[in-house]
Amino acid sequence: MQYRHLLFIASFVSLLNGCASTPINETPPALGKPAIPSQEASTFGTGSTTGAPVIERIIKPDTNLPYTTTPPQNVPPSIPSTAYPSAKEGQIAVAKLLPRTSDQKGWATDIFSAFAALHIPATKENFCATIAVIEQESSFQSDPVVPGLSGIVWKEIDTRRKKYNIPELVLDAALLKSSPDGRTYKARINALKTEKQMNALFDDMISELPYGKTLLSGYNPIRTGGPMQVSVEFAESQVKEKPYPYPRKDSLRNEVFSRKGGLYFGIAILLDYPAPYSQPIYRFADFNAGRYSARNAAFQNAIVKITGHPLALDGDLLRYNNGSPSIEPSTTQLALYSLSKKLHLSEAEILRDIKQEKNAAFAHSPLYQRLFSLADQSAGKILPRETMPRINLKSPKIHRKLTTEWFANRVDMRYKTCLSR
Image (cartoon, rainbow, N blue to C red; front, side):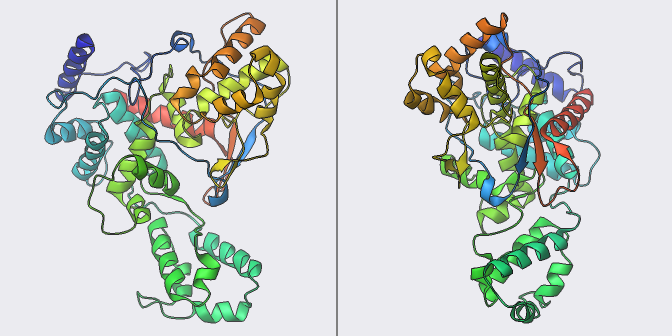
């Protein structure tokens, strides 16, 4: 522990002097919070599975999966305050790694503030992971422009108008009403460019318009925002575990759409959990697909090796309904039930363990350990404990074919470029 402490101090001092760099062709230190030691840590591979089905993930309010922010167990304590850099030192370190952007000092300040609030190790690797995601998601725009946003809103309003049988003439008349900023609601919809503008518009429509609550209450077609495109749902779960560290004058949703709040929640979901991956690219995949998706996709691959039946390697072991596990079993769940005798686990015990799929403890469950033991024996080799989730991304904001693998590779490329700066 003392050796790691000294190593951290030496690497950070070197970073401040501008002379430390991590060669791109070497495996960098683990990102984020220290991973929980495990028996399989030395067997992680980078294998991929071909021929497996690809699942399409629809990114919309009704299908967002839950995130867990349960504090990991057995994680080494946070770095003592004497070893952690001061705000000024941290800002300087971050600024040296940033690409050229407007308000360089402001970005560096807000990034390091989030690191300090979350007690994330202030390493070059962690800074670069954050910078790479910001570059990919928003090109360092605190409130990025979304092409075709007004069209998205008109489509969703019309869909819900039909659902609630609201006459078109009545809705048109309501939208010609003046809004709190002086413009009509129709004019504001047509002028929409950013998520923050849309968030304010929906708040006004719900509170001011006839049929506003009926038509739009609890609904917003875009549920991610800010410079790291973080989920509002994640922010809500995060503040239940850790108090929001900044003064808050407005709703939590509005904090997500701000630069400071968006960075805090984005860094939390990216780095504030232990993930014993061999390469940062798998953490980037988790950022896109959900925590531990890369680990869970490898678990699904192991099931395929034993049963011979194809599964969608999407990293989701259960079905979800409104954020909670569904009564209807998933295909992965049914495949595990078929292995109940070989695993020496009842269906109830299997379900108990897979309910932990979104946290670190799952890798230490009897189900995980026994399944991989069987799979390794069946394959005659140690199977990878991490693999890229096979997911096609769908969202109102996405207008071309994208996958989790595409996202992770793009962020990984930016990460390596940052390390070389």
